[in-house]
Image (cartoon, rainbow, N blue to C red; front, side, top):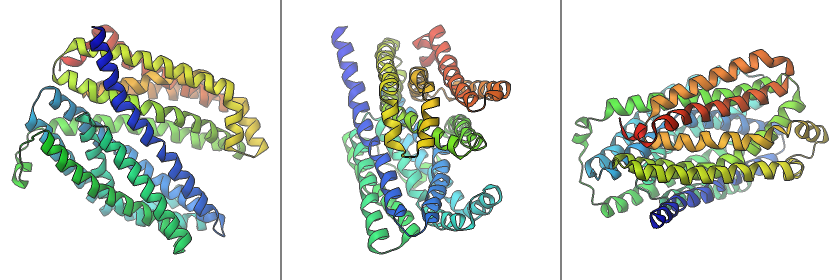
Length: 441
C-alpha cells in the first residue's frame, strides 16, 4: 500500500509540476504587453489593449469546456483501455472547436458595437480596443483547437507536451510583441498580431506532437467520413453545456466584483484588482494539481477502480491543505510587501492593506473548490458541477444583496461565501457516496 501511495504521489507531481511551471509564463506575457504598449506616446493604447484582451480572454475562458471535457473523456478512455474512444475524444473535440471558432468569426462584428453601448471608456480607448479585437479574433480557430489538444494530452497523462506548448506560445508571443511594436511600430495591432501568429504556430507544433503520441499509443487510424459516425456527441454536448454554465457563473462573479467595486471609487477598484491578482497567484499553483486531478480521476473512473480514487483523494487533500495554509501564511506575512510591489500609489496601497485580511483565510477556503473541480471534470460529473455552481452563485448574490451596506467588505464576504459554498456543495456528495459516487454513472 505504501508503494502504491508513493507511485500515485509521483503521478500527481509529474502532471502538476510541469503545468505549474508553464503557468508561470502567463503573467510574464501580460507584463511584456503592458511594458511595450505602456511606453507608447498615449495612454489610450494601453487602455485599448487591456479592454480588447479582456474581451478575448472572457470569450476563450467561457469556451474552456473544450479542454475540460476532452481531458475527462480521454482519461476515462485511457483507464478503460479503449483506444477507439481515445481517438474519438480528440476528433469530436476538434470538430466542435472548429464549429465554435467559425461561429465566433461570423458573429464578431457585433461585439464591439455592444461594448461601445455599455462601456464608459473614452473613444480613443474603444477605437484601440476595436483594432485589437478585430485582429485577435482571427486566432479563434487555433486557440480553440489548442484547448482541445491540450486537454487530450493531459487526458493521456502527458503533461510534458502541454508544458512545451504553453512555454512556446508565450515565448514566441513575447518575441513577436517586441518585434512588431518596438521594431515595426505597429502599436496595438502589433500586440494582437503577435498573439495570432503565436497561436497558429502553437497549433502546428501541437499537431506534430499529436502524431507522435498517436503512434506511441498505437491508436487506430481515422478518416473524415468517421466524423459522421461518431456516437458520443450527445454526451459531449451535455458535458460542454454544463461546464459552460459553470464557467459563466464563475466569470459573472468576478465581473460583478470589478464593476461593483468601481462604484465605490477608482481607488477601491484598483485596490480590489491588486488583491484579485493575489488570488490569481493561488490559481496558477492550484491549476497544476487540478489538472492532475482531472487526468488521474478520469483514468481511475474509466478503470472503475474506487481504491485508486480513494488514494488520490487523500493525496489531493494533503496537497490542498499544504497549499491553502502556505498561501494564507504568505499573504499574512508578506501581503504588505506584495502590495508595495504591485502598486506605487499610496492611496491604493492603503485601501488594499485595509481589505488584505480577507486574503488571510480565502486561499484555505478556495483551495478545495479548485481541486474538487478537477476531480469532477475527470469523472465527467458536469451536471453536479453545474448544480454546485448555481447554488454557490445564488449564495453570492444573496449575501451581497443582504449585506451591501458594508460596501466593499460585502463584496469580499460574498466572494468568501461563494468559494466556501463551492467546496461544500462539491465535497458533500463525495463525503456521502465516496469514490462510488464517481465510478457509478
